[in-house]
Length: 172
Length: 172
DNA sequence: GGCCGATAGTCTGAAGTCAAAGTATTTCCG
DNA sequence: CGGAAATACTTTGACTTCAGACTATCGGCC
Image 1: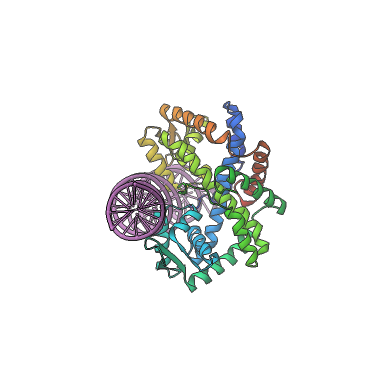
Image 2: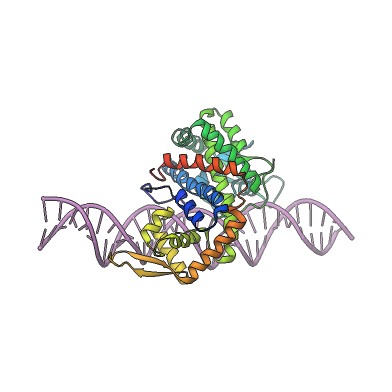
């Protein structure tokens, strides 16, 4: 899923797109287009950095997210449907993800105690320690220095929280 | 590629993750983690909205981006390698994308006038008018109202431009 | 008790992506 | 000039994702 470009572009593609939008007569949509495009490109750049750090651990970002979600849960186990809701992942993709994590010995399937429709994904010891190691790596290489000032980080989170709330990511 | 969740979560997943990070003793990485996670989730939400608007036009976001890039080029045609660089897409994916767009009659392959290694993707009339129609739709439904105040939009673009520059998306 | 709609998970097929290898062509440089 | 390295694109195979269909189970309601 990560992008493939190695070299930086010699100009800001977002600024260029905004200029095209304005010259095409779509000025009132240009700022929103620039915002959306900025998010898209920033996400690709960050995802590429993250996947690069996780690859030596044998994890993709999606698999890492599953491990972290389980490690923060009270019992280290969650129904597959909960994973899908939290991570914005299709049910069929959850099945596949848990299949792979199970094959890698990081997670095991456990019957739900009271609902025979449901299956729990439960973190193994190997899964828990791999999640810790990968997190230490990510914290050091990406999260501690995301390429912004502390003030910039705060403003970014504030604005994106507003956007996500309005877009229906969560209800306050 | 779009996410699959229909209903909003009853809490902000980014704020929750930040709390987990702080309680785990990773306080210095917590703000960066929150920023990165915010971008990831915002991207998924926006991509889902965009793909929903584009689906009736028979386009994915990636295909739409190709059409727009061609429509803004001087001659309406670009070498495939240019498309890949600009859109952060793997060369093999560009081949696949252009195959599909060609099959849909939106683009045609043309020999490069001077470099016999290269192939140009050239917008057809159908491709140009579809790009215009899809853009009108996107402008009205997503870009004109991305879920932020005008001030928020501006701050977002500013901060993300800084992040992208530092992360190597472009060189000023 | 028994039916009906909702929910949980899986399976299948289509689409898209990436890495690696292969072919053709161009460019650099001795 | 001529060969090595770089570049442009395609092909192949593995992996991931999604939509849609299917089975099993649960819960509410008559």
